Image (tube, rainbow, N blue to C red; front, side, top):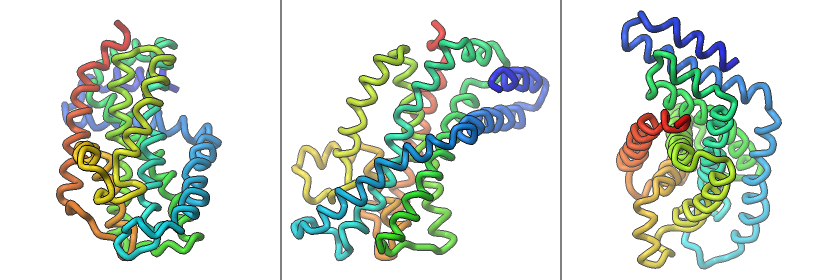
Length: 273
């Protein structure tokens, strides 16, 4: 399947730059999405952790009265954070697949094609967004079963999907940057495990920013996950609001994605060096 992708990329050398870039990106998205369709069991395994967070952690901490949730139940406050956690944990280990492709020689074939490095990386990032959408569906169903008051207006659903796609794309691109630096699966696993929990706990996913000590609050403001959660909380929940404003949330996440995309595209050839 990936070999056919390299052949398709070779055939687009004579297209206009814009159309060639779009087709190359969509081809990469198509290939990565087919992997998910061929192994749907991955979706079920990825759903276990958020289910446990909502059913166990959420139920226990809903009894704690000292957490200011802005008038909503703790389960409602936590549901967008669990969705953000789910896409973070799924996307942050995306680089392992890239290292595996390098070991199989697939990256070599893609790099000798006329495909833009940005298109290849962008395609992988958008495919990670598709995986994130599957996680959003699971969280929505579970949240409804637990009585969370969700927004179902078309514009709210569309906004949530956009946040999920760009959030997943941002963290999967960050994962690719790490993979380009460490280059081995063993080192990547160690670094990935070290990064996921600090990113999660140094955000507003399971407690508001007002509860944080000053130094952690400052760290959270530089954490893209904070703005992903803030946007999801405003778009998902009937009584949800954005602390920073949806415009700021979108600008921060988009800026982080563009910066990481540029770095990943620049470092991508180093995988085979």
